[in-house]
Image (cartoon, rainbow, N blue to C red):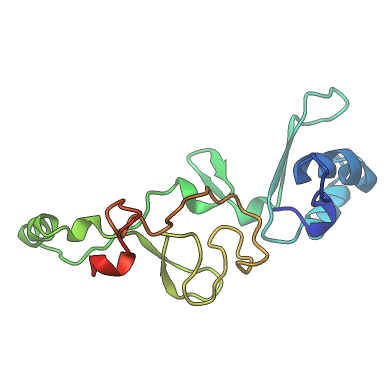
Length: 173
């Protein structure tokens, strides 16, 4: 998510990316200069990442990766976050027979959990927000300030109720 200064005003159909590309990036100067890229990275903040692709022959490179260190290189591919990794699951047992028993009782299908990068609390991926501090697990912003895409759903706890939107989540426990 880009800084607020490039967020579109109401009724502005442009995305924050387009506003940044058309209005703000040219003001920083030529991207082939390291100092320009460093200024741009400071403006973005250390947790925001940006990849600028171009086919313009005036540029030395076809791609510029800003705040590269905030991402991860794995197998020659750069990832902006750890979403490419398989979701961690619960592991209760070391023995094969105990894992088979856990599988029979559904313990291997419990929701994936992770540690919140903001407050370090153990939290579920179920709704995208930390249940302790309330920040978004993707952008680390408070829920009220988060602009991450959230699909609309009539019942965000459908995974608890077996997909029945009319059955309250508490009925599952």
